[in-house]
Image (cartoon, rainbow, N blue to C red):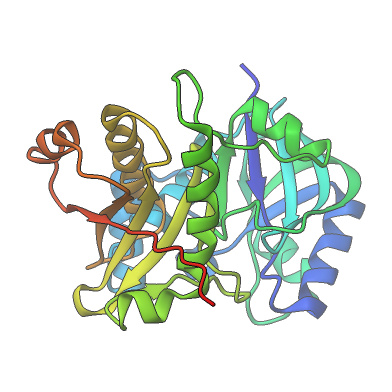
Length: 301
């Protein structure tokens, strides 16, 4: 079955090298990922790859390891790749023609022998695109998979509105909490008083509606005191079961894809009123807190 992937040709914060790498990819029909220090890992088992990574970098980063493994063992001929530049722009879509292979000389040539080269390649038949969005649509993660529906939406230049489905909700509550999300982000430092920091990626984009292949996280933050990511979700009229299930999925995704060694993941659900069902659901869910908000609207002379 065809699968859909997102890969950046190079680090977009280094525009000159990015341009060289992408021009090479278009001309030669390739896409590449890095970690040149590991050498040729094309024939390693998962356990051997983990051991090699630990030996070279002195730590075990499953985010990097899983990216390399997916590149070599999950992307197949016939799959589709979106080439992204940063987190808001599509520059190409391509059809995978071969499985992955290692070529150090190609990697160096691709970036005109710059110090940081990418030696792990896949052959791709590219079609140039130039689609830019006014909000973050891509994670800064090296490589990840998209559902077909989301791929189709993005390649058409559209965004899927992630309004709760499959249940009755109060429309006014949903609209209010949409504005509440913007308010929280705009006043993040005042609200959390330095205990949490709003996540920012390498380009300075903030962690509001942070995109993942399983949906958008309302707000992604960092808790410096515990070196943890914090997934913040607004209840938005959803049932307790649905909001707990969703935040747990997002926490799992962050643990698998963003956490580096020694980092943790916490959850925070923000809702309007106390919910006994939510209380019971969270008795068995570790590292998830609930906080309540109050709206005070007055007209004064």
